[in-house]
Length: 189
Image (cartoon, rainbow, N blue to C red; front, side):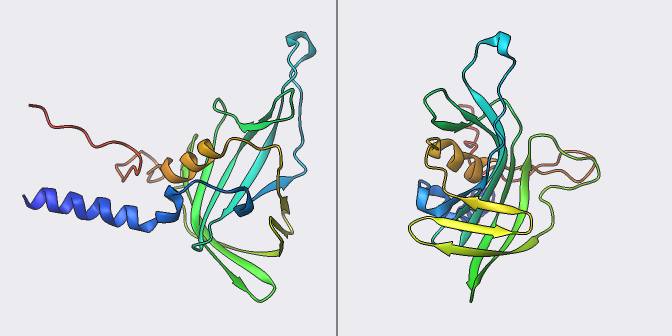
């Protein structure tokens, strides 16, 4: 019985850490690195898609923050989605406004390919961003410029990456940790 209460407490604690991340992401909360450097596949493949690296910042109204680094895919019709076949780097944290800047405190919680000697979750990183906010975010710092990507239409997958992807690595080997979107194993009858 104590084990069930402990598990319930752990699940509730983890859920309460990121309630905003369980709601659908709105375009008004996001900013994409710009410009995306689109590359075409070799001509002999006769493919009309293009791909390019992108960093997506999500400023949840609650003050929570999500970030995904990955490859975006631009279809022939111009719509943009996230690659399922390339790696992802996911960070979560918090953001707040201080006068004319946004301060983001985040940490990487998932890498498709872990880096030996670098534990995950990684240590917190604090960034300051200049910004404008009309209907959509535009943010920038010395590392880059981020703005709306009108053609993006993969909101569900972006939300899943931020909400679900977690890695636990001590710098040498994988270790157990909470996986927010993994169903609990059912008891054998």
